[in-house]
Image (tube, rainbow, N blue to C red; front, side, top):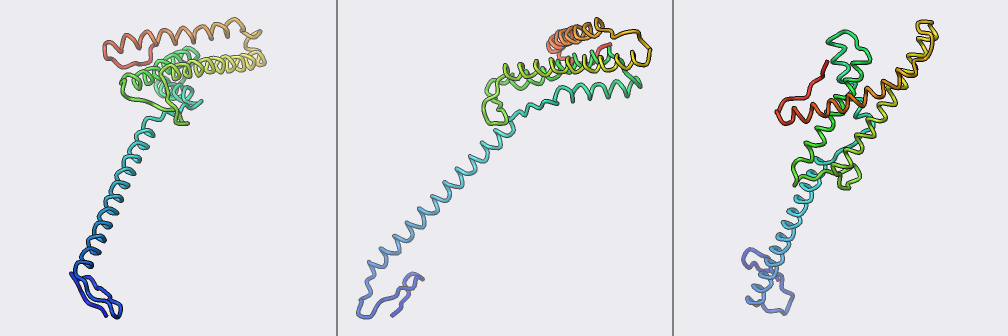
Length: 204
């Protein structure tokens, strides 16, 4: 036998009596179970939303240190010099390397100026200012070796063509010194301009 109670179909087996209190109790249990399930789903969705926001924030604060970052910055500066002057020489290369170091250093310091902000490596571990500065120093040292290597290759070509009598070993070593002096000079300029609020630019 089937009857309706509060729009719910209630099926009674043969020989059973309809008991209003029993049915009401069952209906209330069903409502309570449904309410708890809804609350559970809401809490789960809220937690998922929080987790997603945390992941997005961590991704936004993840710094990928590329081995090409320094050379890319220097290449960008060299491109501007070439577009402006039509060509460039080793004094321009030295300036570009010094400016690249100061520019990347300024980005590192700007990242770590806000104390509550935290940045992470690609593997998810915390990234410190000291680690970033150490990475920058290594990148600069590699750039110095690269520029010396380029100078040696160019010099060998000049010797082969008979334009110079021998390898300018002393000049190539002086190139290394010039690169480090340029780095220090641009860092000093960066500190001064940081206090004045002026942007860092290429010097003659």
